[in-house]
Length: 73
Figure 1 (cartoon, rainbow, N blue to C red):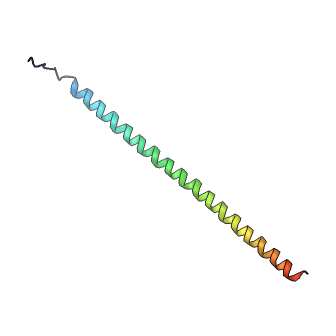
Figure 2 (tube, rainbow, N blue to C red; figure 1 turned 180 degrees about the vertical axis):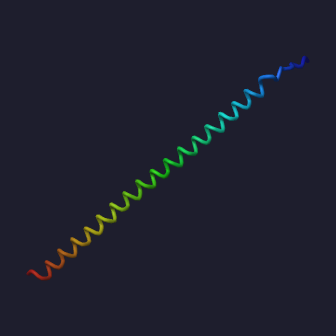
Figure 3 (tube, rainbow, N blue to C red; figure 1 turned 90 degrees about the vertical axis):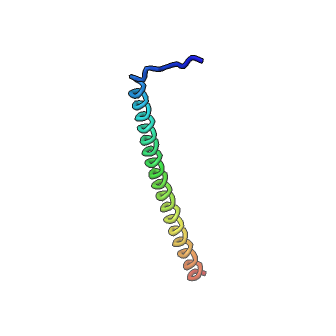
């Protein structure tokens, strides 16, 4: 069986560039996922604050209506 000998002159450069490309892609992916999770967390926080403020407003209006019913016949 004949053994194929490859000239490795340019292979190390290609391998290094390919490894660097993978490294850059992983870093970009992690940064984008992190920023997306922060944006989602901020949206959830705003949504929860809106719900809580609506609940407070509803409870205040309910107490005012109860007081009116007690005072007025």
